[in-house]
Structures are given as structure tokens and as C-alpha cells.
Image 1 (cartoon, rainbow, N blue to C red):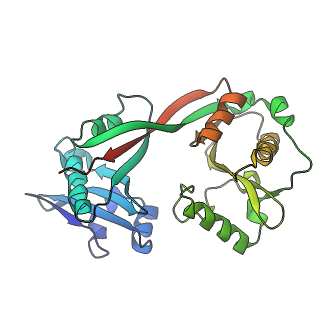
Image 2 (cartoon, rainbow, N blue to C red):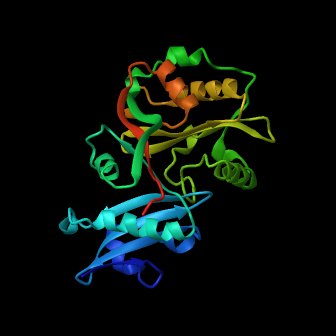
Image 3 (cartoon, one colour):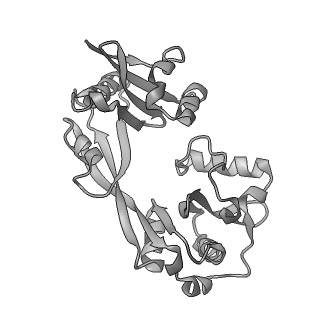
Length: 276
């Protein structure tokens, strides 16, 4: 017998093996983060985590225990979410990355009835640290731009900036606390009162991830100076620099500055057409 349930604080521990400790914590602390669980033969075997925002319900994580895969459980959880979203006319979407159109996640959403999958701006790419074009980037430096480590700013300034990004739907992290960041490489361009551009670099073993790049309208000059400064601080050998370019501006920068990059994946969005 199979059933789908709304996961509560009392039932969350049933599904803990499918979740990271961090995501378990977020589910108990974040008011706009919810989860649906699949139970078959009295075994918690699947979980779908979604976030209610404005104006959509966004699927953030979908997992099924290995021994229960290929039984339609993931499809059932998505359909369960859509049935309940229909009552409030809330659109359901899922943004994801895939290396090609044969990727299992792409094929899953492409195979769902009443879902359409479309390419989004953005890509995930990498370039060896030894091949970063430092001389080209150095030419973009601008001594008139004030660059500071983001984590050296007052806590209230950092909170206000992150809140601004969240309100713009530009922040990709939940409960960003900087623990995964390589803090000396997380920089911002500021005039003292306002942040005009920011970039965050995170650690992943020998590799580094340029995880987030943002600039205010009309502040591309500050952003370029910021990237030039980061390039001067990067190790000159070792692993790779991975880049998640998620906006047209960041994609154009990657295309211009890193023509020899290796594209690992591109972004897609699956959207429910609200038919049942």
C-alpha cells in the first residue's frame, strides 16, 4: 500500500535517511519550506521538498530510496503536490541543471504529463586555475572602485544586502551564513553606504566555486573591477574554478573572459501547466 503525506515535525524523522542534516534543520526552522513524503509498505521511501514563494511553489529537492525507484513514486509525489496546488491556483516549477537532454532529471520532468521543460539562461562551467587569463582580467582593474571583503562589513549591512537579494529573488541560498565560503575571496564593491556589486567564492576540496555574482543596474564597471581583484587572489595552480553563471550578464561575462571554459551543465525550468 502506498500513500503520500504532508511531513510535519513529528514525522520528519521517518525521512531523515533521505535528507542532509542541513535540510532537516531548514525544514524545522523555515516557515516557507515544506515537504511531502511517500510511504510504501509502512516504509518512508520518498520525499519532495518545496518552497512557497511569490507567486510559485518551487520544488527544491526530490529523492527516492534506491530500492524503491522506478515504481512511479517520484511522479506520484509531484502529482500530489500539483493536486493540492490546484486548490490555491499556485503554479509549480522546478529549476535544475543537466549536462544534456539524456540526463535522468531532464527525462523525468520531460516525461511528466502537463509539464513543459524549457531552457533557462545560465550554465555551469569550469576552467583550470592555471588557465585563468589573469593578464586580461588585470586590465579591468579600477582604482576608483572601493572593494572590500564582504564579511568585513558590519553584520547589519550584510543582513540588509542579503534581504535585498531575497526580495529580488536573486539569492539562490536558503539561510546563507557563509560557512561554506572562502571568505577572503568573497568581495563586494561599495561606496560605504551601499553595495553595488558582490561575488562569493566557496571551497570544494582542491576546487573553488564562483557560486554567486551580482551587480546593481548600471554597475557593470564595479563588477568587472571586482572580478579582476578576485582573479589576482586565486591560486595559480591546483584544481579548477567552477562557475555557476545564472543570469544573462554573468553568462556574457563568462563567454567574453573565459572562451576556453568547459561547460558542465545548463539550466532548465520545468513548469506545470495547471491541468489535472
